[in-house]
Image (cartoon, rainbow, N blue to C red; front, top):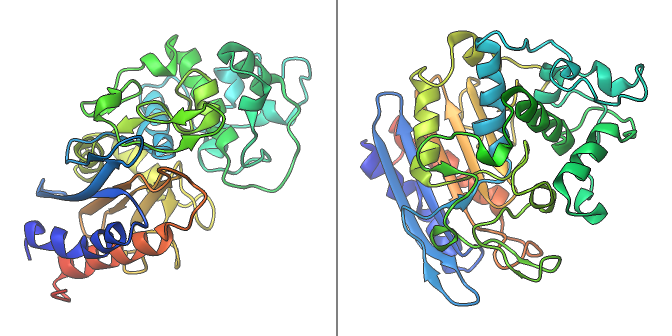
Amino acid sequence: MSLTDVAPRAFAPVAAAIERRDIPGAVLGIVTADGQRAVCWKGLAQIEPHEESLSRGTWFDLASLTKVIFTTTRILHFVEEGRVSLDDPLITAIPDLRQYDMNAAERQLTFRQCLAHQTHLPAVEPLYTYGQEPNTLRAFILQRVWQSGPPVYSDINFMLLGIAIERITGQPLIDQPLAANLSFRPDPRLCAATERCTWRGRVIRGEVHDENAFALGGASGHAGLFGTIDGVLDFAHGLLDGSVLSAESLEAIRTRQSEKRTVGWEGFYPGWHGGDACSPATIGHTGFTGTGLWIDFERGLAWSLLTNRVHPSRHKDSGILSLRRETSERVIALFDGRTRL
């Protein structure tokens, strides 16, 4: 079955969720290793303060897809260039990390550990409540005595990696070069709206939804990237055809560092957001705003579902987990020719 037949059938549960008003709108894109591509979309880019329709060219706040599309990939490019090693400590790039305690645990953390979420750092911290001066917040992140705990999926890991990228390149993240249809500075008029933010006192559109990334200047290692569905699919296709990363770097993002995580990505496990029909050679990641990307290397297939499920509020049940899983199951079943849903 061709992708042009697969996409609309796989999109059916998404269309139903939009009709039920579980989510305002969504775009589903599918791409194969040989470059075939299909995209479906429906719904609204914005409900309030007035309605605007969504299109294939709508820009989405990619949220934590920033971690894999930008941060992980940029660090691996540094490794390929010989500028750092995955097992180098972060102090290779950030010598002032916990500079008042040379024995601090944070000074021992490596790029690999942060990328694979194998550190003692907490999941998240409301840093934006301490102020909105980006350089002061960066200094706070670097000098904070972080409470130690078991390894968890941590935004703090990627905040540190973002600071490392800034130090290595000498450029703020928000000014880093990006591929077409990806940006830290999108045109708000082209973006899907996210939340009616009580802290900022407005509907967020074209500026990062994540409060910490906003307070850090609009971009961080964990969030801040925007993209269209074609920007995301271009990146996914580059991983499938080997043009984005070297063979060694591809091996890194496909090799387990823990039960569920590789370098930067999640690896397939039963019950994950990408559905249980994926091959074991599948990696994926999701974003809080309602985004997701999965890449099945065994099938030579990638798909991305981008939604603005937090618009106008995150405080509702959008059913995003079940929607991601059902959509992914349909993509794979139809691609494999096992069903004519």
